[in-house]
Length: 441
Image (cartoon, rainbow, N blue to C red):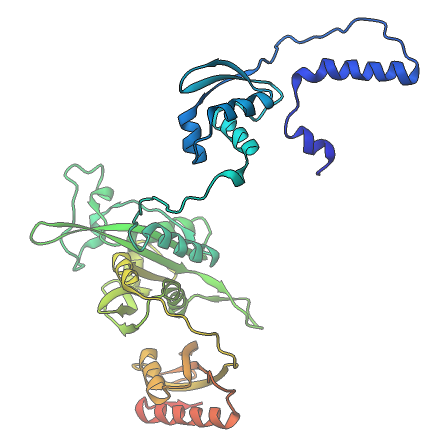
């Protein structure tokens, strides 16, 4: 709470003013209230506070202020402030600063006092600024990493740090490059360097599930280690995401639902959007450890691979619940960011419109194919295609699945009319029927 007293006392008081203040108070009592001074002053002052001794260099004063001030002016200012000059040399002064100046204890403090009295406005602004330019590597890898860490942490993820040493048995029957093995391992469980972040994360998931913590979202920044057939070693940076258990929903009949492939895909897309990577293509891919595996590429570089961990892999860790995994190739991402150019455009003045479709399609048809058909059919007004529900069950034929897809339409120059929207949706339905064999439900 700011008061007049706090304003003064937070700046310190003169410890040697006590006797003066006592004499003044006693005098006022005697003159005004008819009091009588009955004794001499008793001053209990065991540890006397002496003036500060500070050295002042004229050169330092000039360097700090940026202007050479006449020595006579400096000495006059110091004396007017109650600062005593104990000794004087050609280039410096030894000063005695009174205790009431509690914030003047160093040379720079003395220079500040000189400048305050001399006047900041009396220091001329130089016409030329001499400075050296410093260059930093772009992008700042640590800054990018912190941005993604903040994004993931704010979405409920916990960061983990697993051991770079791992068990070589994890890689049996997998087509990885030659392992980087330790010459003198501590145990068979820590006898080689890891080639993927997956197994360390699964160990962390198992540890938590064994302690009744089943709903997990982890991320890890880490390195992998490879050895080529020619005997060269490589160290690569990766970002791994792990999602398992349940998630909260906004459904009226259920608060929780199991995480799915689209949960991990949503987090992957959020990271790519935050990084500003453009021209991304999603393609189905095969993996020895992941089913429903997809890989995202940009400018012919692999950006991220993600999918559902295979049951055979989960069995190695005695895990019985689904785990979804994504591995970002962080070195490639930093290369893409280095080359990207940011573009800005005005926020649309007119509202966007969302329309949904339910499609009954063959299981072999991927969402990426449906997304491609949509943008081929409507290139101008269609801004986004997203999947928000997938159904496969007893009510459908074994070779069929149902997709619920949303379409976002926007005209940046005017408000869309119902007639325009209906026409676009009719084109999309016809395209899906003809090109994907879909049944509109």
